[in-house]
Length: 227
Length: 227
Image 1 (cartoon, helix red, strand yellow):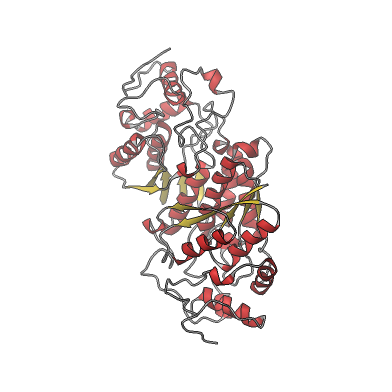
Image 2: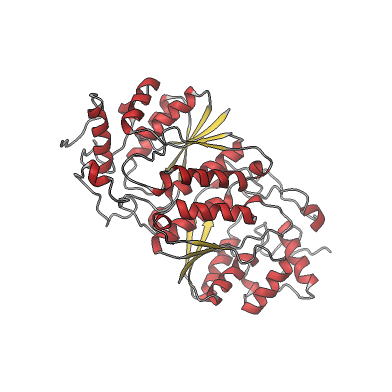
C-alpha cells in the first residue's frame, strides 16, 4: 500500500518513516520549505529519506508573508534554557499558526493524486508544548476533512491519517526508533541553524532530556549542553 | 471585524469580497499562484482587490509537483462544449485534489496571525460540478479544524468560515453581485488563459448560461460563443 509521510528530518518524523516502512508501505515523503529559520532540517529530511531509498518531495511556500511565529519571524526570540516544566505551561512562541493543517492539506493532495491510502504524521500530544494541532481531537477533525474533501473520500475510498506517536512519550519514541534502526545521527531537532545543535532551545532540551532519562547518549554533537 | 477573503478573481469570489465589505468587515484578500494554467485569474484578483482598495496577498506554491488535474497538468485536456447536464454528471477533470483544503489552511494561518474572526470563501454546492470540497458538510468539517487546530480556537475565539454563496444558483450569485456593484468586467472565469475568454470551457459556459437566463449580457468579451 502507498503512504505519504510528512518528514521534517526531526526525531519524531524520522521514526514515523521507519515505522511506515516496517508497516510494509511503499513510502512517499514530503517536506516543506516554508522559509523557516534554517534549511538544516530540510537537509536532514533529505538524508533520512535517502537512508531508506525514498525520494523526498519538497513543497515551497513562504509563511513569512505574515509571520506570527518565532520560526517565521526573526524579531520573535526563541526561548532558551527552559525547564520541561516551563515548557509545559503555555503554547510557546514556536507555534506556527495552522502549520500542521497546511502540511496535512498538501499531503492529502499528494495522497489523492497518487492514490495513497495512508498519510503518516509524527504528531505527539505529550511533548510538553501543548500545540493545538498535535492533539487527537484535531487529527480526528482532519480525518473528516480527508473523507469529505476529496473525490476518493466521497467514493468511499478512505485516506487514513496515521499518527503512531501521538500517545507516546519522547523516551518511548526513542525506544521505538532504536528498535526500527533510525539513524539518529542524520536527524535535526534544534530550532537554530548552527553547524551543530545549540543544546538550549526547547527542541534540544526535550530531546537531550529523553536520551538522558533512558541512559543513552544522543549521537549528534551539541554546542552547549546544560543540565 | 477583520476578515480574510479567498479571492480567485472569478465571479463567485469577487462577489464574496463585495459581500464581506457590505457586512462591514475590514478585508484581507488572499490569492494563490499554484502554477495553474495561466496567470489571468491572478491579474483579475489583483484588479478586483484594487477596485475595493484592499491589498491582495499572493501565496505561491507548485501543485504541478504531482499534478492530478487538468488545471495543473497540461497533458490532461480541458472539457469543451459540454452542456450543463453533461457537467452535472461527474466530478470533472478540472477538480484539483484538496485545493480548497490547501486554500483554507493558508487562510486559517493568515487569519489566526492577524486575529481575523472570519474567513470568507466563495464555494457553491449547486454549480453542476459536484466538487467534494464545495459542499456544506465539508465546510462544516473544516470549521472543526479551524476550532481545534489553532491556539485561538482552543482559547475559545472562533474563526468562522463564511460561505455566503453555498446554497445559491449561479443566476442568484449574479443578482447578488449586481446589487453589490461587483465590476464583472474585471473578473475572469475561463479555464484558458487567452486574451479573451474562450466561451466553450465549462467555466465560460456556466457563466454565460447564467447571464443569458437572467436576460443580461456578460460584459467581458468572448472568443467563441456557442448556444
